Image 1 (tube, helix red, strand yellow):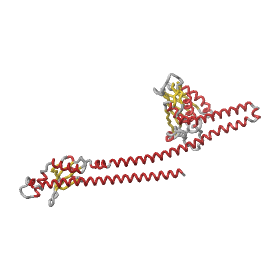
Image 2 (cartoon, helix red, strand yellow):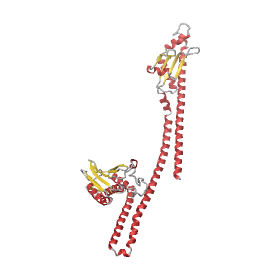
Image 3 (cartoon, one colour):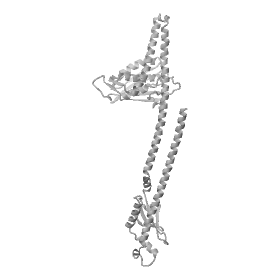
Image 4 (cartoon, helix red, strand yellow):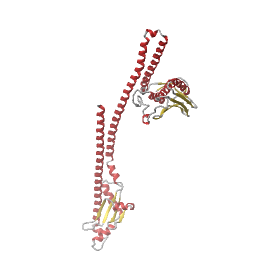
Length: 438
């Protein structure tokens, strides 16, 4: 029920956020259009003022006498426009645009509307832009033909308009990003917690199942040992005692695995670093597994080719790492396990590769197998025994040593785990019993 409610909330919130984003987009777009209109009106007003100044100058009688001898107003207007001082136009436009706080980068010119020939232009490269500019104002008086056009082009108009709204746009984007990030964080955290909860539930179920088996075996065997007839038979007593011993060891190992996870999570375990021969540890571990594997008509091959196999490491933890990797190779080989242990080295450390020809796994599953409690779903949760903490332990220990682990696997073709231990990545000491707290 909670999952359904959460999904509904996520969908509703996503739709609401999408609506807000779309609304913000259109709001910003409309605001930019309004700013563009205001810019256009301001530019038009500035040009109008410049033209009014020019007409006032033209109508000045002291100026008029310089341009015509006969009272022909049309010829005088043409002569006046053609004789305009470029510096005068520049000063007029600059003064008006500065008063209106318009963009400082612009180009201007005066051209004949009929011939599209420029009488005055401050930058010939913008000839076409000025002819097609939105900012135009005819230079004419009443009853005069609109022959001459004053045009201005703002190459950075859009940038200028956006800069006027830059603060609001940035703040809007930042607030939206914060809201979206917060929503994403809450949703992803909930999903992670849900997945972790499911994994812990599976872990508890697995642990209960795994612990009940040896406990039940010990209980039954102990009851048999209390039988007087069996007590009179030393061979049967020895047999049942051996079963109890092995089941007790199995129970002890399972409890230790759980304790290991608790220690790893606290991060306060200590590494007792000593010089170890990896080849020697592999031989010891492989010998113990050989009996189990051979009982299933399997085989363990060793290809120990590392030129240098001496590392500074914690013996018990490294043995546990090898045990976990070999145990996985055996468990996930349905029949006739074929396991190969290989080593090689470089100038930094030793690589230990453990390959099997078992069931393998899909590439998408290899990303999560080193997470605690993680187990790849294969139908029946108990068809392969385990708690889902072995590879988490392996990775944590290798990283604590300054090493790493990788996996390459294909369904139906097996898996290859490659563990790396550096020669001298940790602080060394002359004391062979040096410890390091992690």
